[in-house]
Length: 552
Image 1 (cartoon, helix red, strand yellow):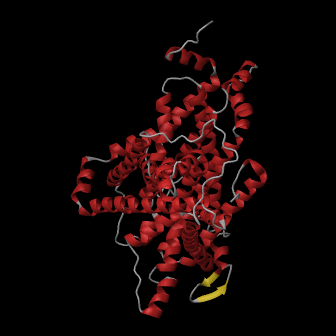
Image 2 (cartoon, one colour; image 1 turned 180 degrees about the horizontal axis):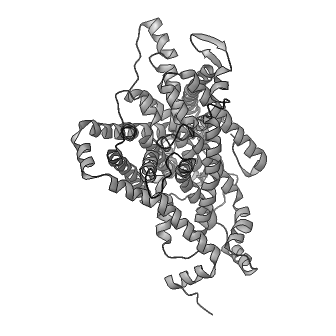
Image 3 (cartoon, one colour; image 1 turned 135 degrees about the vertical axis):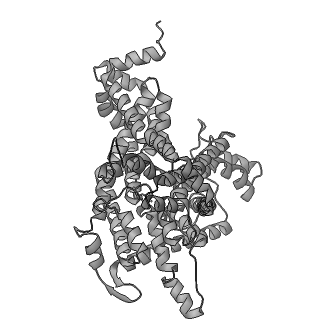
């Protein structure tokens, strides 16, 4: 019996014997080295000692840092809490209208987070509908600008992200342990606290992580409703506008530290216990233990209040989009939609659609290639490539955009002002999610199937396209849908990269809202959601049961 030879030398020999694999590995190293590692190095060296000194000598910047930590932490905690209760109500209670509640949680994913800020202004701003009603009837002046408003908006904006993460974990929990605990005397809150919540902890921590990273990087909402409560992302934007890349780089590096700390804490907590619930023991016929009628009533009320708030925010946006000037002139009109959605002079929605589709396709294709070579091909530097692939997900979008504009606004490679840089920025933020999902999927596929194709004469490229891809089609399509939706809504990552020619819908919403042209901002938001829904509908028609989008 011959033993398989191992070692770096053998790995290199095998790689050179398979030109297709060699090309894929080298291309992956070059791309991630050029657009992930190199920009990080440039940002670090762009932050000179003078810039660090300026940052620490001005109280304004330290205050912005503290504000960022406080607001992001509060928003992440409340969004995760709301997401958990919302998901628990849908998965563990007998409340009515579960499909409706799932649909409501899906709606915010169609719009950029800055749209929540816009809707908040339309409802609770100084001239907002509810603010005006309170002042007219009770002489009460509502002022939610600053931390209170930002806290509310970020909670509503990002709770669907927490809900999606947590509901996946709750669905996967086997009822075996819960039933066993109940048979041993655990009931009600004790059962929830000792079994259900502990098994759901990975989902809760991951949800907190995702929300915190998004809050750290959030730019649009703090800029619109933060008032004098300045955050680092807003300060970075200001320094870029003022042509101070050194100071912006310093703040970008500091913005990354809390994000990396969150990742470290996540791994630390999850490494302390076992959360495995899926085993070989049969569970068919077992029904999950659900909540009492009293708890059902409370959960239904909670979900209804959250849903009402979301409906109000989207409803007011639609009203502004289809009336001349809602509150002053409520006459129905399509003028705003024609002017800022279908006009050739306002291509923001079309730009978003084109750039998002291109970036989503490239992100999933690159994630597929990366997962394939990492899981299937032995080569030196695999751990470095894997680290480089997942690193962008730990970096706030604001920092990714900052690193790209600082690096590629001057030689040797100049990409500033081009659509290429926007596509790359979108790709870098969404590719790691697809990479993680496809890596897990590859590990579930028996390697012998690919070996059989190789023995029949197929090279790596042909094996990947004709054997591997068809087996992973559902995962690939699901990741494409996710990447497309996130790209359509992104703002923080590309705010530094857009130009008048390549302005996108999320940026237009922000610009119109900041200048007080709320009806145009609302029209772009409605156009963006319409374009997203239409594209997802076409994807559903093409792939049918292979992808779940509207299955609430």
